[in-house]
Image (cartoon, rainbow over all chains, first blue to last red):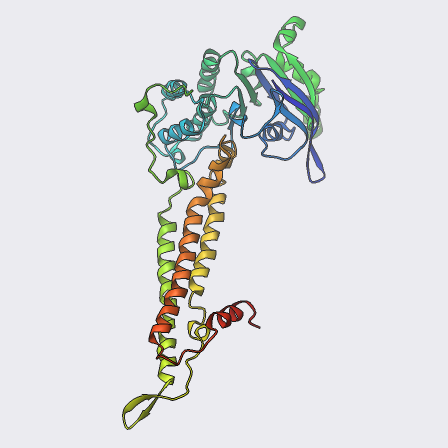
Length: 244
Length: 181
């Protein structure tokens, strides 16, 4: 269980995370949603210790240190691979450092995305870079796989295929936390939705509960965010002086 | 227990020095810079010989084309002749520390591989990848600086005519090095 207890994070005077408390058990696919600047990336970086914060983050009751950090993996749209290394050398690097590295999963995903194995990563297209970032995160052998906007730049066919593969390959003990703006796309694949707004958790709901209430994920998010459906017509009216 | 398939598939194909340099970094440029800088430092250090021969020459007098030692003359102290001939090595050392900082910045170029480095389960790995090469270069610089000092002193002693060496050389040397105003 990954537990976040009253996490607060400040960038100077600005509060990026405001009293965030969460429990993430193993075996879930969690969607992390929020507008730009809501604190999604900051939250992930705090979990990995890339940012300092106030509060407590524990994994199975222990603070996250070098002893247990291999249980967490990270795919980020900023990319965390080494641009000069090939995919094959990355595999060697990961196999060398992460005891749980799954060569089987790595090879299968490399084949699935048809990525070149001996070309430096810097020569990959943006889409391929994203795919490789995700492959590394999934192959590391982590129990918690964090993905921060992993598919920015990938076409819809690739993304949909990937969600299907993801569902097929995940072990029962693996949790995926997926931060994305592609809410409708992932709504069928996630089991829980977390909503962040201005650094605060404003919604935490399972898709089963949503189904029970007859609500779609998009509707739930719009309701929680107090989305004003008339804002487009009001804006057009202000701009053009005419009704929509 | 690794989940890797067969031994041949997981065989590490990286070069032997890979665990000691930032992954994917081309170290050729750095090594060439280091070698050229060391050569320059050595050239600078050879200035010692010019000063040594000039000082030895001062111990002699010339009369009718004959060269004889001046009775009661004393050779200039070692620190004066040495005149920080090792300075070049310390400049190289500072440059290599600068390269070390560049190693750390390298993880933020084009991607944020710093995130991978900071997630490595072995806490020593990050330091090993980033600083081993720099540490070796710094040690080589220090070794050459020390060699330069002791070799110069040995040559100074051998070349100075017997009985013309001043006493308390090292005290003078260190005093001059640390307390010079």
